[in-house]
Image 1 (cartoon, one colour):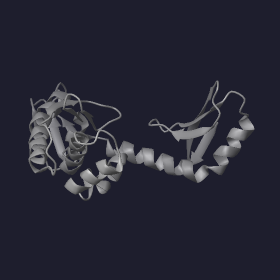
Image 2: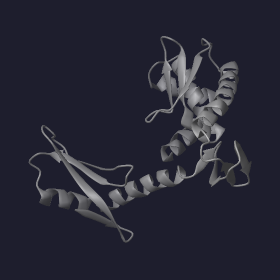
Image 3: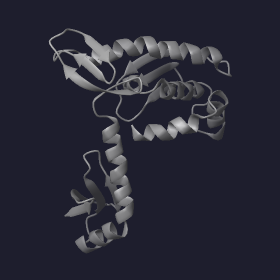
Image 4: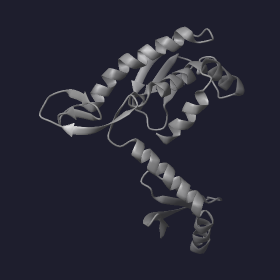
Length: 212
């Protein structure tokens, strides 16, 4: 089965599960339209459901393609660079280009930059936070589904290394978000009020980060 949009065909994968009562349509990162449904769901029903949700599926494809575009190339602090490989060791930036050798360890370089910047921004927001909180220990690692994590019991904040690729405004939002968890461990109204007290325009960054 194929789904056509903008003169392009997208594969439709149907996943049938035992005990599945509802039918869900999603577009995955590989741009495959995935239908998850019950074992007895007919092909006719699935085709009808896809037809009825045509424009919603188109929106999901556009959303995923935007995310793919936003992650192409070399990103650093909110700027996107074209990678030029050279025989020169190390890394050099020039306008919209970044020059590096084929064996350059990009992840190690990102981690080195992140250790300095993330700690600077954590110190800044901790010093200006509106509530008295314990100073957290900072950890940095790659995460696939979260931008940050706060362990309320151990006072450890873990930040996603991928934040080094984005404008520091998004890093600041995640830090404020996690610091707020040291006061409120949930996502209650009081939690979001505290986030807003420290960063009034946080909703803007929260929404924009969905495209990353």
